[in-house]
Structure formats: C-alpha cells, structure tokens
Length: 311
Figure 1 (cartoon, helix red, strand yellow):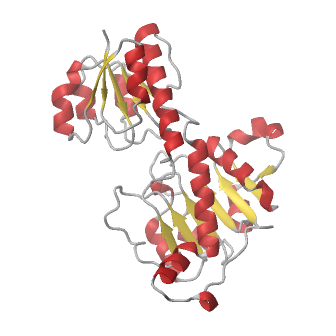
Figure 2: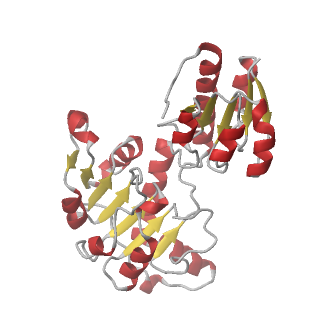
Figure 3: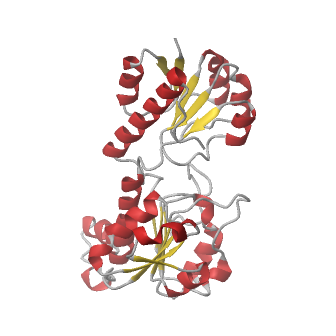
C-alpha cells in the first residue's frame, strides 16, 4: 500500500480521498528539515502547501519518494530541478486558488484606492478623519496586468463592471487573444507608462532579479498604484520604498515579500503601503479545492501512473 506524508495544514478532504483510494497517510505538520529527513524515507508521496521547504537534503533522504504534490500553484518552496534529477514527479494545482488570489488582488486595489485600512484604524480610535481621507475611484481607470495566467485572467473579469481599460503584458496571450477581447496586449514599457494601477500576476524571473526597479518608477504616472500578490522578489522592496517616499508613485499593496515570513521589512510602517501576510489564496473555498486536486492527482499517479499538472 502506498504511503503519503501530509506535512502542511490543509483541508481534511485530502485525507478522505487517500482513505477512499486505500492509500496510507500521516499528517505531521510543523516539522523541521531534520525531522522530515528522519521520516521521509518511509513515504512514496508527499503533500505540501507553502510552509514546508522541500530542500535538496530532504530529497536526497527520500529514497522511496516518487511524487511531491503542492496544494497551490507556486512551487518556489520545492527544489524542482533536484527532484527531477532524482526521478521524482512534482505536481501543483494550477487554477485551484486562482479566484481567491484574484479576489484578494481586487480587494487590495480597492483598499489602496479608498484608503480603507487607514479609515478603519482611525475610526476605531475615535478619530473622525473624514476631511483627511479622499480616495480615488476605480471606474474609468487603466489597469495593467503583468502576466495573464489563471489569476490575471480572472482579475480582468472582476474589474469589467467598473468600465476599466485592461492592458496586459503576456507572451502567452498572443496565441489566445480571441478568448479575451476585453484586454489589450502591450509591451511592458507601454503598460507601466499608461496604467493607473499595475498588478503583478506572473512568475518571478529565473535569475531572481526584480521585474521593476527605481528606473521603471520614473516612467510611471505619479498617481499609479502597485499591487503584488504573485511573488515577493518581483518587486525590489528598497526601490519601491524610495519611489513612494520620493512621490514617484502614489501607493502600493503587497501580499508577498522577498523574505517570508516577513518579520522585518523596509516597507513596514510606510503609510503609503498596505500589507497582508501572503493570504491571497487563503480562503475556505480554495483550501478545499487545492486539497482535493492534489490528493486526486497523487492518488492517480501512485495507483495508475497518471501524471497530472506536473511541473
């Protein structure tokens, strides 16, 4: 009987699927790298979310591991190339939390435009800041979406009712433009210069370098807002902080950081930035969907050799 380690907290729907398929499993969360190394040789499959870092040391110790499943889209916490070198399949669940992430990006957009966190905080303190809080409307603005996968596409539909012009920078969009007549694919330079809001929904560059730096901010509208719910290293946080302090741009909202968990960050306490702790995909609905997807995919692979959503 195949055996699977679930090393991160997730919906128990995954356990029910493994039980249904007669696959043995253990739920052991919050383990250190050394603790995982000691037990991982006992398992044929491993399920993670974002907390567990599947390192070279873990992979080297996993003598019987055949598949690593990520309940989510990003696989930055898995050494994918080393896993492949060791004949392990790595799977993710693309689209499973796309709506949740897109909705969070939309919430960040509205929050930064209307200054919701500041309004909430000051009102709770009995400070009636009505005269000092003047927001901006989303209606008739230009939204630039960098990257147009499941999340970027979903966000483009969420803003349709606001009469927003949507600019997209995506290499893959050209082959499927007919499916998205409501967006316009443009160069990165055109997108950053014309957009009122720029939202990132792309992969980080392979060399780890940020996609926008200080020079890019100088080409943007001073009224622009930056939204990042994709990957932390897409945005250089030092450059972003300087751009905000020098009034090169109006504000920003981030759900992801270059180093997580973010216990310290140069953007902390900058009043022009809204921050959330990488929770874009954290909804009750999405947690069930990704757990169900990853458990089914691992079951199909271990029992039938079927490979779904390999990376």
